[in-house]
Length: 316
Image (cartoon, rainbow, N blue to C red; front, side, top):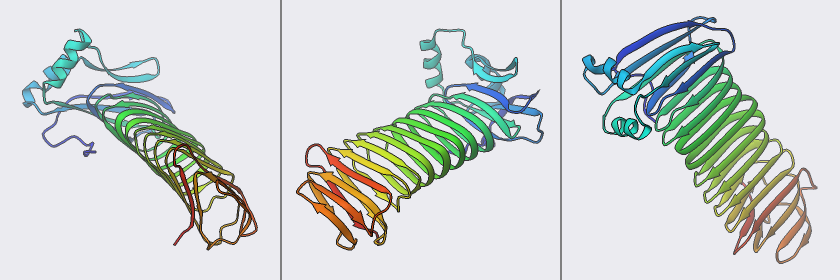
């Protein structure tokens, strides 16, 4: 992801300030833009700066006019959007054949209600609280140091979320990548199709559903349910609550501290339980069930379909 701050040769065309309440409603609907959200200098002001790079300075205003870019406050919501005069096909054809970039800088009160739609663009949001709803196709986003509620829907995009805390985090990505670190939320819901998932240092009730991709989970606290179809799953940590891990048609690897206590159930075509664990229970060809180190939270590790392999190993 490129630096979201406008380059030095970007020409500022729109620079406006709006009086707003908190939380401050803002909506951005702007294809191929680079959108940057940060706290502003005043609790009752929202500042919008729209700049253009990749064209002569004298043409910058005409580019925004050609794209139909406008800023306005409708009731309480500040909107940055396009309103092209032509058919969508003609408008997109012009946009794709001109090497110009629109940069949107938003300086906001600390609490926001943001609705962002930025196809083929980039989004960078940091140091804000409130509710963020982001839709992205064919771009990238970095979201850091946010609190409140976060919902991300992305396609063919690289999504990175760091240092989030709040009530709800939901992310759905189809093709691309989904990377999360330092997360604390009442509920964490992740869904991926062909987008590798990495979640580390997370606290909360977590649900992960993945198809045709790999999933890597590390240092999770709280109940956890994971279902991965057609891709490997690796879990590394010491589950503190009920944990259910399922892969279909691939490999499940669970790495635990050697002294971790759990009520363990393993199912799969091929099973492997490290001898370093103090295990008591029953073993059959396709099932292992019993206690690790005198028992603890329930841990279900299951690999089904095809030649599914399930391994529970002691962590180095």
